[in-house]
Image (cartoon, rainbow, N blue to C red; front, side, top):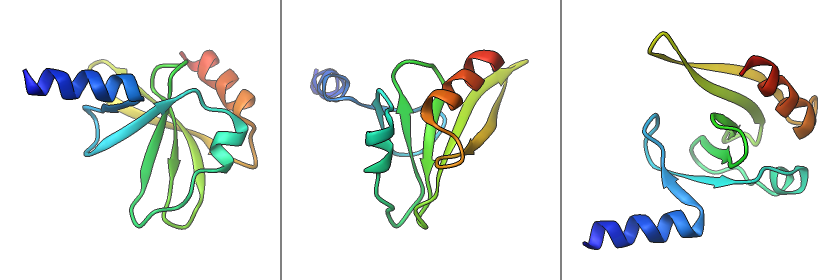
Length: 101
């Protein structure tokens, strides 16, 4: 019962457990202003988009932000690096995701 309550709470707040990585990940609607405010941490982390499944921003400890699309092909989990934030806008990265997916 407690586990169910915790899962509902995290889903309501916007956090979820990604089965493809360790730790908790944030799932929000990615916008340019939200990406700009993402701060570097001691370890690399990901912020997942709530609109396109598998689309996320990976934030490195150096502060570099990279757009990535995670998908499955013939049962194998793969990642496609779209490009870096700054070189691409969020809308350009979303358009690439729509073309691929």
